Image 1 (tube, rainbow, N blue to C red):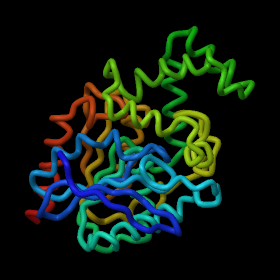
Image 2 (image 1 turned 90 degrees about the vertical axis):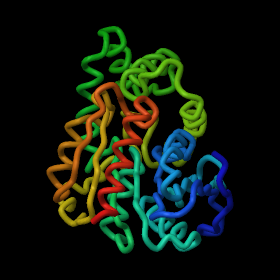
Image 3 (image 1 turned 90 degrees about the horizontal axis):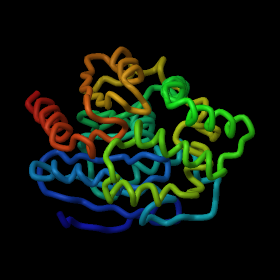
Length: 290
């Protein structure tokens, strides 16, 4: 599906966006990473038959400007960026969907800028970094012994770029990031976006399950009750940010719903696209019916 593309001025730079579809209350999507870009979320275009679906690459990744200024890679700046995108595109009322890091960003946004947000979809995310790290450690423990031991050995020395370590991380990824083989082309594009991306390295760390960056102590568990809009939480059975994290979100957000995808890991919208889109479509319709 084509859509309309453009650029928005953000903090002296420009951010790329694309709008697909027409009419309805628009769905604004927040991609993961941080630094991943929108590419892997492209299956959400399937919702554009009923509403506008808006994608944008957050500053520092994908088709947006990538300034060499690490002071820009702060959570509060990315929260303001959401407001800038909304204002530029005239998005007074929206449904908001955040996937992975985009879910953390969506939670942060809802705790400070909730005006006009009709509903929230939190996909494969958590209320804190700590919860995610605990789940990831359990998943690593369940890997084949030689893979687990390789991960532990190189993590102890901090040798994140060793080829043996990188090969072991790929085993984790094929089990808990995306279980499709080969990975879909949009996800491959996203993986290339993340390779050496300074936003990812500054805020997250060397890989998906070692968080040494500025997000390592992020925790909004105690404030989830402040989110009062209808909320759908989605998670894959084998997700790196797993069902325990999703259940903690459901306990904290009043009236929220949880949808578990039995054959998916971290990218249910790619792994079980039809079922994922049906769940989100049904949720948005019910919210709009009142």
